[in-house]
Image (tube, one colour):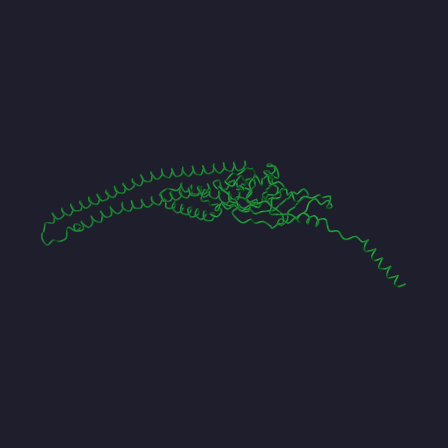
Length: 437
């Protein structure tokens, strides 16, 4: 009986074991294993080698990180997307629980060798090791990149400058017969897409135009897509901190022309203005971009203003020195004449002194004393006349020099007004052109 019970128990266990289903492998695992089991990532994924692989590109500018004018570099943050079709990564979704899209490691599949021609620094982007693949074999590689690219930056119109920098994408090895390029979106959508751009920086994004072209060289024809990033600077901060103070300093210097040219206070006033102008330029030197190939208009204006200020100050110093020398020489000569006359006539100032050689009558001595007194008065009058004539000549020379310098002052004043007017009109014109962009 016990033997029969044991047999029945074994049979029941066997029946239950055969009736229980085996656990199935998840469809995603089966699909991934099937796609990558015989996949060769080192070979371009086409069945016909004469057929080119078209890579569709898309670009969206996220932010302008740095504009290095001295080194001619532009650093931007962009969202970059590549889309291409892989003939060996397609499947029937109905056989795999209607899976339409999966993620695969980028290192396990073939990827195009697209580079940016203007790269001048290492690519700095988050490491995103996966790409999306749909059931038709379309692969989408979407990643953010910090691009440090070479760009010809022009600073002549600073701070109303507009920069146009290009990012050129192309295959480094494959010709257009192997890898062709195309646009993922229309050119109009790419150009007017500013939704993700950060407007709280110093720069404003105007447009991102794009062009397709074929580069011909000795190695073959290479497809290229060029994105032109056009940005402009917000000038308000520089207008407040640079342009308005510089115009005020020039107006203050213009006020010095109302002081007399031969006034010592004018030299002190202009020296103080020059010191203030120099301190202002030193403090603001870091704010003005410096480029070896192009000089900004505001830098030219600062240089011209300082040159005019130094010229006016030098003219005032030379004038004061010349007038001082003329007055000093004009006063010394009559004093020397008076001193010489008194020395020569000192012996005759006491004609009544006794002489050891001759003795004359008192009447004759009285006539001699009167004649000597009259001669001394005549000599003193001649000295005074010469002194007055010398002073009059010095005064006439001063008047002539002052007349010349008054004309020179008027010329400098008009040049100041012309420079200030030209500078103001130029800034207003640049601001108007900046506003129309």
